[in-house]
Length: 350
Image 1: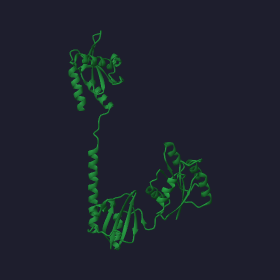
Image 2: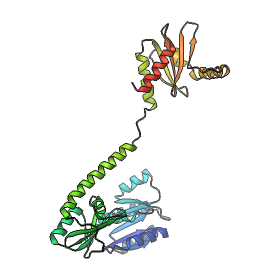
Image 3: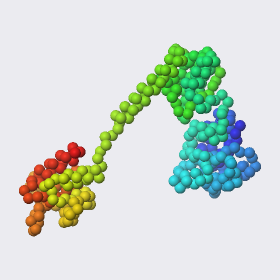
Image 4: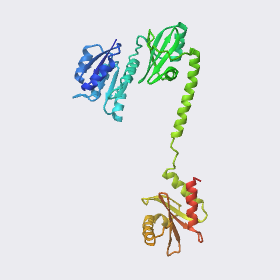
């Protein structure tokens, strides 16, 4: 029997851990409420493992773990916490803490950790062998037994009479469906009871057929899950940078565009031709705000704005999605044609 010291001052945590660990005869549990009491207990008593809360009164759990590492370096330690920061997690690693658990502690996970750290193989329990392999041993020896299988929070029963699998259940499932689910649980622990605990027979197929059919069921189940995941996958949407890159590429390749600049809604310059010059200093939203007011007054919508400078340079502004585009066009170019080209090509992803 392994002696475990739990250090916690929270009555609810103490009660939950005592209740959760009580069914396991492999553990003898001692409980103290603070770091000083824990240090005295380890000094005066044989202890195989210490599980401490980090949020202890007066002296916190980190300091207790540092003390244990210095005074009892071979004593395995575990930690539990309400909140864990990256800095604290690094400290736990440096102090060789084997595992840590968020409160309320998952007792099933804690038990698995205790068995692993303390290298316990419980009486009547089998670790490290698949259920399929074990059922073949049961068949060879013509045993009558019930197998209690546990994997994390999942639990199931498989009953055998004279080596035959006669019943299975887990959760709300029974029969073959339950057996095929249990068959492929990861890191399963098998506990053997020398009796058939399920009175109702719900499986009537030879073991070899069950084993072959279970693999087919598993493959179909995995394929079904993959299809569901594919159906739920959200189509990839081009991000803002992708849109800007696509717009810039289209403008750069258009022979009617001399220079250009692309702004976002907050007037940040996103992209420009190397010699954009004055274009990059334009404030596009100013012109579009003016255009909106004019459109409202004239009761007509606009798609672009042309600006002619004193130097006879023609700038055109138009909006696409969440961006403003400003271009200097060659003489005779129709800006509406350019707008349609940009909007069509960017939308189509070409």
